[in-house]
Length: 346
Image 1 (cartoon, rainbow, N blue to C red):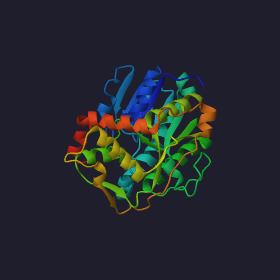
Image 2 (image 1 turned 135 degrees about the vertical axis):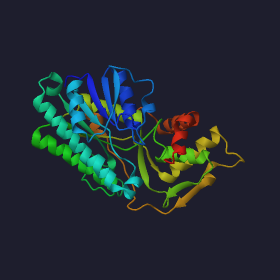
Image 3 (image 1 turned 30 degrees about the vertical axis):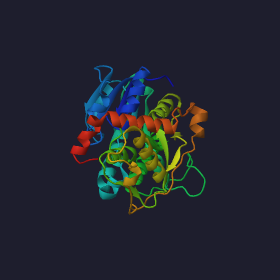
Image 4 (image 1 turned 90 degrees about the horizontal axis):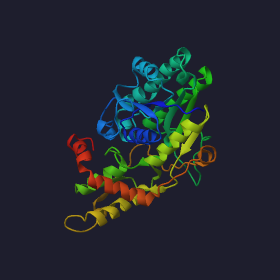
């Protein structure tokens, strides 16, 4: 495809969306970031990159079809990348409605606005338009045995979060099949890196360890997740919008499968070396096994062979060094995550 110059990035002030924007700007794209600036989306995630005409932040939600439609036309958007989502599984168990409203209804509103745009706008951007949906490996359910999920895996969501993302994916593919909207779906494994919201596992453990609080590990701690650095994931998304084929889906994982308990112990080891625990001993002494959460999937893992073969996707970050850099970032940026702690959301 002809590379578009103008991107609309929903959820652009979130952890992954803001990381994507940084990479897109470095590649010469112009970006409009749309974000509701809820608890997880924060303007400070875009500090240093916001600049009128190059990277603009618009306050608003993805269910505002009129706003989305106006942004598409006014900025001559060539690709909409939908990072906007409620994404924390624990929250979805407590309040599933918010996940359905944002992830399912919000995606429908985006698709509706995009379809109207490509049908009615005569500009070149609308003619070459693409919609990229950022999904997750969790829509495929829980892996048993030795295999990996791929683009051909059957959907089998087990949590309200995963079900809401699966519903969104089905809508995206339906709009592609029924209406001919050029759509691409990407699936990623667990992301990590700087600026991740403190409710997520890695920053949650770092921050609680430093505060001298228990480090809660669900069940027996043997649940397995595949970890990909946010920059590697975002590099894959850029490849998908530039080289991907409409109607296709692509998996972006890190090839780093760790049990939760081993990951928490590695975080403790890194903290022990960098900021010794007051009073001595290892931070691992704060680990506390707690009752498992409902419907906790045992293992995830993605086969990225298709993305590697067709897009040229690769993983640049070694997990151990990437995790160490992430720990260093949180140690150096207590002012960034400290506010979340004060507001009781970490």
